[in-house]
Image (tube, rainbow, N blue to C red):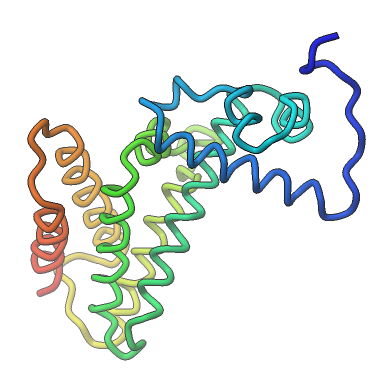
Length: 205
């Protein structure tokens, strides 16, 4: 019987989630070393964790489920980085907090190109015709939008409503990062962060 179909034993309380986290951490590290997510395999991840491939199937039904879980894991890392950057700025300086969010987004995307491509490959999801899109990418837009709303509440003037400002800032930053990744001869990373500042200057009146 192959490793993949061997009988699985139940993890003790708390061990399952810990192992799932270790699997995702290992997949994330491998993605940094490999040439795209197509090279990511169940066996390779299992080898990196030091477990049998069958153990991965306790948490992910197949490779596609592992890749989906990895994308969600990376969105979690990105959101944590953005929130940490925002928290380091005084709450009274709402515009600077927006800037910190956008800078953290750009730097994560530039520092993790393979992860970022995986995260943005499928975009957002819709549950029904006319329904608002949802998913981790929309959650990030909502995070930025909420920061713009706090700017407006604090007295900062926006040229567009906060919900539009959030979309404009996200789409603009995403597009600039995509250009950065597609450039064979890369400019310095500061050019992307500088663009984010220019974008914010256009949004604030």
